[in-house]
Length: 212
Image 1 (cartoon, rainbow, N blue to C red):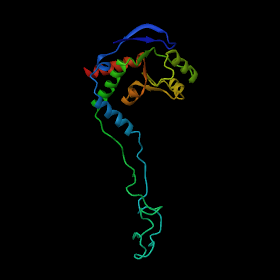
Image 2: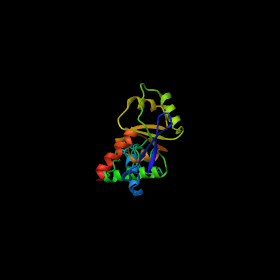
Image 3: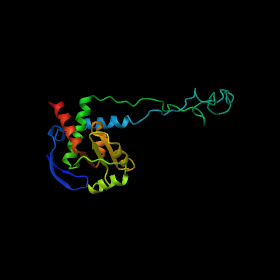
Image 4: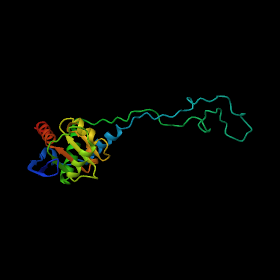
């Protein structure tokens, strides 16, 4: 599949780039994609939730009332879970939400996601560009020129460009990442993925060598 390469001003550069079949035309595995997204979302959880059980509540252990003759339950403490302010029964405790997925599954999930995006024509390539100083206005102008305003955009660069990142940071629907940090969730969450020419060249070189 060949796609056009655009300039940062939105004009067609006249160049074409071929998308590698090793990356953008693989057999899609939806189950592996699900597992990769599930792992990503699980790892966003801190797992620091905590409630106090009856042994941790700071209340008196004095017997509430006499054992018999009240017609009520024979609870023996104000720490009892059945009393307002008492401990919580089976409440959440700190835990890890880590889910293990092997490297090949993660790679297949990313390639499956990129294949779906390519088939849906939701991938663009733009010539490498940089910004002299951080400028949200300047970055917005680039996105407007590429006609992706209002969409969830994932811009992938080959190397970390601080000014480009800072320029996009205030834009709610735009994310700038290094292509080496690409993950399945962010691919599927984006409406359009924009590669710089160096980023897609790096991605295709690394994956082609690994596949070989």
